[in-house]
Amino acid sequence: MRMDYKSDPSGGPIQTMLDTAFGGLIAGGRSFEPWFRAATRSNLEAYSLMSRRTLAYLELPMRLSQCRSPQDFASEQMRFWQDMFRQYAECGQKVMGAWIEFAQKASRSGGKNGEKERDYITFPEPEEAGTSSRKSGERQAA
Image (cartoon, rainbow, N blue to C red; front, side, top):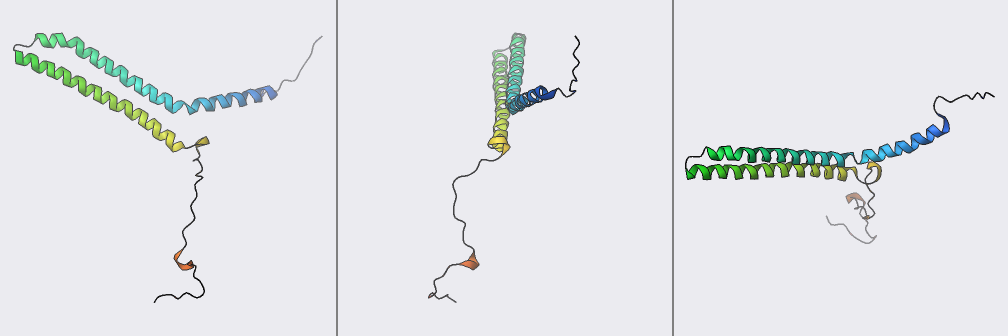
């Protein structure tokens, strides 16, 4: 026995339900995108620092072998340590820059759905100069 059903090209009610569910997952995933971007930038900077330091350590014996005097040796060591401190400082600045950018974007977005949260502390509005409240018997100075 053959049963013919008309199939809805849009997928019917189940497709709508799945679209709604996965749409929420996609939106939730996108909310973590700035965090992942900052983490990726941090990892990239850490890997580039490791590769630069590895190259510096690998070329250190060659550079030290070219030294002819104790002063050359000391200056080469100083150059090595200064480069190391400079590279660590640059990497730290770039990593902090990535996370600061993330924090600024997160603080700009405010509360729920990018709206700023409501301030529940209210203050009375200041009175305007032309509408000052005077008692009926008071005089105005000239």
